[in-house]
Structures are given as structure tokens and as C-alpha cells.
Amino acid sequence: ATNLVRVYPGRRRLIGKAAPVRAVAGVTLRVMPGEVLGIVGESGSGKSTLGRMLLGIDPADGGEVRFDGNPMPRLGTSEWRALRARMQLVYQDPLAALDRRLTIARQIGEPLEIHNIVPREHQQARIDELMDAVGLRKDQGDRYPHELSGGQRQRVVIARALASRPKLLVCDEPVSALDVSIQAQVVNMLRDLQERNRIAMVFISHDLKVVRNIADRVAVMYLGRIVEEASSDVVFKAPQHPYTKALVSSVPVPGKTLEGRMILQGEPPNPANPPSGCVFHPRCPFAFDLCRTTVPTLRHTGPDRTAACHLVPGDAEPVAA
Ligand code: SF4
Ligand code: MG
Image (cartoon, rainbow, N blue to C red; front, side, top):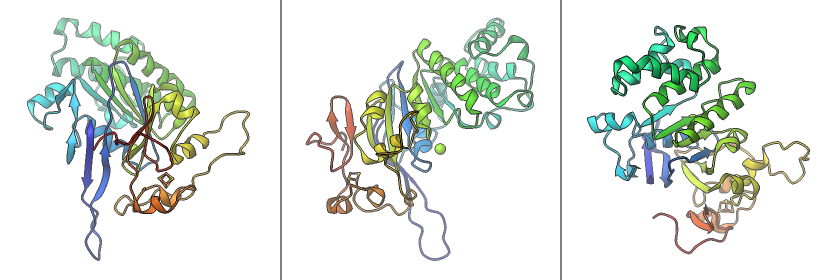
């Protein structure tokens, strides 16, 4: 994905003209087969919009999404529908994703039929296999979504997403609605399935603890922009961008005191009216004059890592124009 931009029309106001909202403003990223890219940021940072743009569900107003090296076809075209089987989305609310009138076996089997993936006589075997892969028992197949727990329902959604053997799986807050005790189980299962099937996964979450457990690389988003990207270890152990530092230090570490923690003040600004210069400057404890006037561009700041901050030394050339 190169330099993606998505502008939402501004909400109607009583007085004056609403400004367009840039939900995603110039984001470039890539995810390889077998890799998990975590996308973190506060709510409203554009994470979900970005996830949907990667699948072609939300069109980009600028820039380009490539899948397997080819440009993403337009939403709704037969090319897009054919590709859609290879790209799946799992989001927060499994009940909304499922049809409450159909048994879970039917719903897991649906993609097999729609995309003609396995011959009819082998469909039941494949449904059993998928249920087993996500830790559901065969005899649960004739249950309905409301007869299952939240965690089991999300397992059904994941089984259905895997039915078409996707190459890309975008998970948007997939465990945020689940009990904390269940979250780790589902995350471990996702990681296991992703590794075994060499799926490229984009894992979107506001919860850094969860992302740390699953992501190989992490991109940090603030107000529609990526402000830092690196391997998961590097982001959590040695963050460079002040926003990342604040996010990381807000995660409690057992045995560590609050001393030296950087507390994030205030709320993210309104994306319809982003601050001048560095959009993080109103909340940044290190902000200086340049930050208020000049946008810091994303640059390589070390081997295989990028950041967008005037205080972090980087390459002369920005990452993407
Ligand atoms: Fe803070 Fe300035 Fe860096 Fe933005 S560019 S994160 S305001 S120091
Ligand atoms: Mg979201």
C-alpha cells in the first residue's frame, strides 16, 4: 500500500461549511506472507479505515493498494469479488458478522460454496477440519450463534474467514469485546493458524499488550498517519517517536514503578481540523518551534525502522513521497 489517503466528507454543521476529514493521510506499508503487522493507536486514529482500504472495501482517494504485486480492482467488480476470497476481515463483533438464523456449520461452509473451493462431497470434511482448527467441537456445528459464548462465536468467524484459504487476513480489534481471560487463547490460536498457513496478517488494536503478543512488526498511527514503524521488539523496547514512547509507557509492566513514565495528556485533536506542523505537537512534551510549523516526514531512522519526528535523526530522503 503506497501513500493511501482517505477523505471523509465532513459532518454537516448548522453554521458554515464542514471541512473534509482526512481519516487516513498518506500511509505506506507492506505486509509479507507469514508476517503479522500490528497497527496500534488510539481510537479515531484511522486504523479501521486503513484496514478496510487494504481490502478495497473503503476506496482510497489517492495512492494505491497492491495485492500480490497487482493493483487492487475496484470494489464490486468481478475481479474484486474473485480476489475477496483471498482477503478476509475479522472485526470486533462476531454476533454482527454472523447470521443468527443459520447454524454455525452452515456459516463456516458458506464460503466453500460461494467460491467453489471444494467439491460438494468434501465440504463437510472441510467444515469439520476448520472447526477443529479453531478449537470447536464437531457436535457444536448444529448450534446457532446465540447458543455460543463470545469467544466461541469469534472462533466461528475465524473459521469462516479461513475457509477460502486467504492470503491476507485483516483483524480489527478481534479480541477487544472478549473477556480478558479468553483474549490470550484466541490471539494464540490466530497466531498459530497464521503461521501454519503462511498468511499475511494485519492486526489492528488499541491494546498494546495484545499486539505485542502477536505482531512481528508494529506501525503506530496518530491522526491518520504512521508516526513510527519497526519490529515489535524494537518498538516496545526502544521507541523513538514521543507518541510511541507515551503509548508504550502507559502499559503497566509488573515490578516497574510509575517513575519515568510518560503520561499522554489530553485527547487526540479533531481530524477535521488537524494541528499545523506535527499533528502531535499540542500533546508532545518535547515540541519546539519547528514542530508547530513544519510537518515531520517519515524517514528511515535505523536499519529497518522508520519514524516521523524532528527530534529523531533519520535519512535525508523521506520514506515515500
Ligand atoms: Fe514532538 Fe516535534 Fe517530534 Fe512532533 S516533531 S513528535 S511535536 S518533537
Ligand atoms: Mg476502530
